[in-house]
Structures are given as structure tokens and as C-alpha cells.
Image (cartoon, rainbow over all chains, first blue to last red; front, side):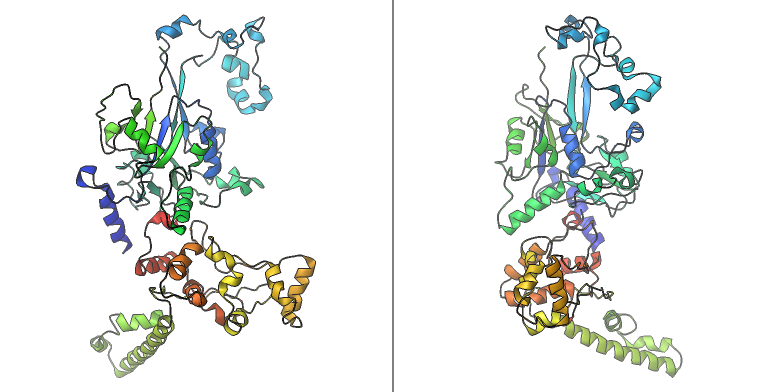
Length: 333
Length: 217
């Protein structure tokens, strides 16, 4: 019975748009990320940690790429040899302190006492100042031209993670989400190896043992489980909130309204760079943005009329059909 | 009950042809006796299951022998529900509007028991709690694992409030789907397995949602 159910559902959702694969969706949750508005403050990531019981794994595990950040901010640097940046003298910290330049550049210290950063301090025997180089000469980073990109599960409609799962722990829901059922997951990690976005996170350790020492365990969200070792997990578009919204709508015999709820990251974003909603509803903000930017589902290449429009989907050429629309960042050049 | 079904529909009981497989009349008699026993068990369980007056519903099947949980006061559900006909939702008032059914506050008990049956030992114990301003530490009997999302609200909506021809007075029969006949018990103990198979069978029979993420979180 259940195997039949899985197999029929699977084949239904695995069909492409041209075969009429999508028509039975109840909702299609989607997101829009305006990179022009993103300031890289990481508030969305923090909100995600709080909402989804994500363990803070610590510096060492983080260095081994085991951080459980379902929503991560990716940082990119503009090419340093773009003309306008050449004009600016490199690493001139005085620019930041207008009218009050420090007497010597080495006088400028980081505002945070280095004792707050013991982990960083120990690295390579260098002090924080030496390593990061706040005097403006040693910085490993450019001073200008950083841009940020929030990266969460793209909830692909032709997801590469789904068909490779040997136990059907990840499957497509009638809401257009890639579900991850923790109980069913056996930790084969095929899905994360097959995800082109690297957005699946594996519990290599029983993080719950030390991630929430007493009284911090009180902050855990009861609406979703705390995952144990050996289980894959990923962004769910805050399915617990979706569930509550749908339940409430059903109790009141109506449809879920646009803007009735939002995922934790969307709720937290201080600049409103993230928009969340149901793309089945043509009146929702999300579907309006998608249609304004002339980005369509089920395509590997968009045929935009207006090349000035900023919308794009990440790696859509791979035919993953992601649900997240990014609006390109515009730079004054 | 499982025996009953096994014998009625299984390969042994469904046909007498299986009998010559066993040599000797002793085995034959034993099998015959088991068949007869199984038949009666099946009949009796069918009576127990079919004796519901909830329309548009197929009660879930499955049984479980839960341990008796010792509660601070041996609360007699039978006196309240069976004798005095108090509706389940009078005390478990959150069932119809939230995920959990809830345990009534002591003030709700005292609403009646300030005047009713004040001389009984259990009520005296309750009054002690009330005067100490301490709630009795009731122990949870029906618990689903943390990874399961279950709402009483939606199940009551489906089986009681949106169910045509269903009287709210009979709500205890809907409750009994998962909690057993609590009105015949004193303190509740678990008589239904409340595992995934139990839920899934009922969802299949009653055309409930079948998405993993509906219940797993």
C-alpha cells in the first residue's frame, strides 16, 4: 500500500511540465530574493537557526564543512580590476572615518577586544590584528566589492536529490516542496552528493548532546524534531509554519492567504530582500514578481523580452527547476 | 482480535483443505478447535468494532495492551462519562480548538466538587491539592513521538463537527477510535497502538491525507 503510494506519487512528480506533471499541486511555495536589498547581515541565517533547531556546531566542525546552516550567506567579490575600484587607493581605511583620520594607520584597532575571539586568536599564533590586518595593509579581503547571496534549499521541482534516495526519505509534496522525512532517512548521503547547490546537511554527530546545554534546550522549537546522528536535513521552507497556516485556513474553510505567514528568514530580513508566497495564487506578491521579471517555471533557459530585467534562477540550465528567484544585484559602474 | 482475522482469512482457516497436511486426528481436532475459537474471536471483535454509531467513518483497527499508569488520584472516567453523561469536551476543552486535548485545570474540577461528593476520599485528596494551590501531576498516557504532528482539532472537525448526522453528544465514540472506551475505565490506559500503521490504516480507510509531511515533522 505505502510502496504503491510512493511509486505513484514519485512518477507523478517526476514528470516534466511538458507531460503535465505539475497540475495537481495544492500550493507551490516559492521565494524571491532581491540581491539589491541584501546587505549580508546574516539575520536570516540566525532566524533559521532559531526556528529550525539547528545546532551550532563549533569552530572546528565548521572548518570541516559540517556547519548546519540551512540558509547560508554566500559572499562573492567583484573583480578587483574593474575601473572604478582601481581609482580608489587600495585598503585605505581612512575612507571609513571621514574627517577624523587616525594619526597612524596602526592606531586603528578593531572595536571588539580580541579576548572575545579566543578561537581566532589562537590560529597560527597570530593576534587578531596581525592576521586580519586592520591597519589596512594585510587584509586578505578586498575593501570593496563584496556582494552577498542568501542560499537556501531551492525546492527544485525536478529535484536531483529525490530520485537517488534509496528509501524515499526525500520526495516531492503536493505543495511543491522537497520533503525530507527524518525517520525514514538512513543516511546514505546520495541526495547531498547529487545536489548541485550543496544545500543538504548531514548530521555527522549527535549535535543535540552539546548544542543546547541546560537551560538552552528550552529554546528548541517543539514544532519540528531535533535530528539525530546519521540523518540528512535541509531547508524546508519552514514547513511547520506552512502546516499551521494550512490547518488554520482549513479550520476556517478558506484558502491560505498571501502574506498570512512567512518563513523565519523572510520574517526576519530587515531590508525585505526576501519574499515568500504561493505561486499558485496569481495575486500573491511572489507570483507577481516572477511574472514581472518574466521568469517561468519548467524552463532551462528563460526567454526574456526585456534584457534589463534582473530575475534569474541559479543553475536552471541543469533542469532542476528551482522555486527561488534571485534578482540580480545592480552596481554603479 | 488479530487471531480472529488470521483464522478467518489466513491460509489455514480459510479452507479445510489445509488440514490433511497434518497427520493424525489429534492435530485435526486442535486445528478445528482453533478455527472455532478464532471464529468466535472474530465475531466478538467485529461486534466491538462495528458497534459504533459514528456515520461516515471507518474506525481504525488495532489493539494494544497498555500498562496501567498510576495517577496521583485514581480519576474515575466511568463515573463522569458513563454514569453522569458528561461530554468529553467539557473537561478536555482544548481538543476541539488545538493540537492537544488538554487536561482541565483543578479549578474546573472544583467547580463541581466544591459541592458534589465532597466526602469521598478521592475528592478529599483533590481538595488537598486545591488548598495547597498545586495541580495534581497527571501522567501522560497517550503519547505520540516527538516527530509526529497530530492535531485533535482537525480530527474532531472531520469526524464530529463537519460530519453530517453526527451528534456532538456522542463524541466519546469518536474519541474511542484512538483512546479506547475510556468511559468504561477509571484512569485511562492505552488500548490502541497509536503507531504509524494504526494511523495509516485509518487514513487510508477514511481517505485522510497521505503525505508524509502531513504527520512527520
